[in-house]
Image (cartoon, rainbow, N blue to C red):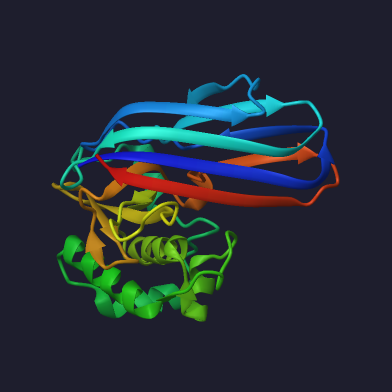
Length: 268
C-alpha cells in the first residue's frame, strides 16, 4: 500500500526559552519489506540546521539545536511510503547483542512477578509463535484502551494492574510477557492507517515484533489483536519506548512546555 504521512509536532512554552536541543525519529524505515519513497523534515523557525545519524537499532535520527529565544517550535515531517502485505521476517538468527537486547527486562518492561504469573497460563508447549499469539490475545483482553488513563512514564506492570492504557502500554505488556517466557521481543513505533479517520484524526501507533527460531521476526499488534498488515507504517524499533520516541529534547529556561501532535495519513 502506498501512503502519505504528514506529522506535525508543535512545542509551545508559556515564556521564552533561551535554547533547545531536539531529536526526532520520524522517517519511515527502509527495512522489513517496507520502502520509504520520500521524506522531508521542516522546522519553524526555519533556520535550524538539521543533522542526522543512525542509532544502535538502525533507526534514522534527525537532530538540531535552536539557540535563539523562542516560545514555539514546530517540526513537520512529510513522508511517502510503500508498505508490504506482511512483515519480511529478516534473518532467522539473532546476533548475540540482539539476543541480549530483546530478551532482557527494561524499566518499561520489567520481569515483574505479576507479569510472569499473567503470562504463565498462555504458554503453548513447544510452540513459541503459538505462545506469543496467545499472549497477544491475553493482553488484548487484559487492558481496556483508554486515552489519558496512563502517561508516557507508565510501565508494563502498572498498565497490567490498572487494566487500562494506550497502544504503548499494550506493547510494553506483551513485550514483558514474551520475555518472561524466553521469547525475544522488541518495540515498534510508527503509524496505523485507518480509512475511517479523516483529516488530522490519525495518530502514532506502537506494536511488537517477536522473534521465532527458524522463522525470524513476526509482528503482532496487541491493541487490535492482529498481525501487522499493509496498513502499518514502521518508523523505529527498540527494546521499549525509550529507544524509539518520535521526539525527544531538552531546553534551557523555566517555562512550562506543551506538546501538540497532528498526524494526517492518506492512501495514494
